[in-house]
Length: 300
Ligand SMILES: O=C(O)CCC(=O)C(=O)O
Image 1: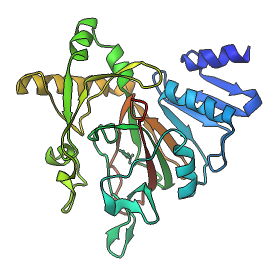
Image 2 (image 1 turned 120 degrees about the horizontal axis):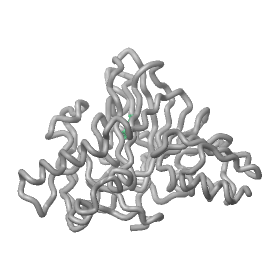
Image 3 (image 1 turned 135 degrees about the vertical axis):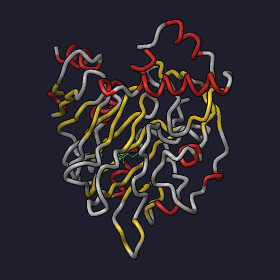
Image 4 (image 1 turned 30 degrees about the vertical axis):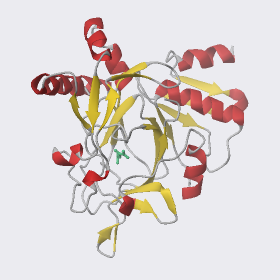
């Protein structure tokens, strides 16, 4: 009975499932993506059974929300490195001293400088698609967050692919796209851009426009507003019209999961299956201080 309800929940058929022998509950957040995982303390090692359940929920729901966590940098590294090797972000000045695997997102100021990357990721993207081997997932932990505002938005690129016509799906499956770290800055869509960003440190890379998920095989659109410059096989006008259509299609308000942060929230998201963005609607007086790890996809 339990095995059946777990399977149905993983297919997205149940709103909530309790893993009785693990004291873990998986509660869906929207019909399309996202689940809250209740009863897991990420500061402690997970048993194999717990990890397997979390991993299955991760590849099924794409966004896992763990509330009320108390995580050191090492706890974050220990948990997230079970999914794959951790990547070191290109923006070196925002890495945590002594733990370069931790990328700091912060508008908290120390000696006249923000402690991490302030107002990062204010455009739809999937993390590090500008790398030859992009990211599998990211773990973001809210240490200090605004009472109102500063939410994070998520949208499923698998759902987006599946809701296109078969004709367009077939056409897109034969295409590749160029991704470039500097694109988000040059396009002016990164309001956090400032002098000294190592824009040219990462050359352009190319990825298929449609990618099967490295665990489930489920196909997703693999283009994003932040880093995708163009679709290689189309003319510039065709490419920009197609990308703009796909970006709008992916992020329609009725498919978006909007998460309001509480201190102690940790969110693990699947960069193979979604795009996300931060919302910069809070002021400098509202502190938003977070730590992130980024996991590499060695499975592709
Ligand atoms: O700050 C946020 O809400 C999103 C941050 C982000 O886009 C990222 O970490 O990639």
